[in-house]
Length: 111
Image (cartoon, rainbow, N blue to C red; front, top):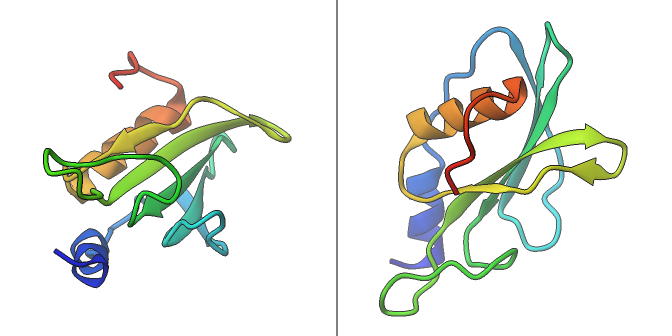
């Protein structure tokens, strides 16, 4: 799978809850996509990146080929953030679950 095919696979339609404000921002440090999610009620925020070719980290399959993945982290103050959570091919439902968990500071970190 080449990078364009992988990006297409990861960029399915995402239906965000109405209580989230989504801000598209320029991708940095080699990320393919980046957006911020803010819970309108709590004002909590998370940042979401799509790393399509392991520019942000090294994530590879058993043949040492890059695996596209989402990286989600909760912002905890100006210039500070919690460690990132990485999601591989779990699909958009799992991405939304992790964003919800990070916005609400709930649950155990499983990565």
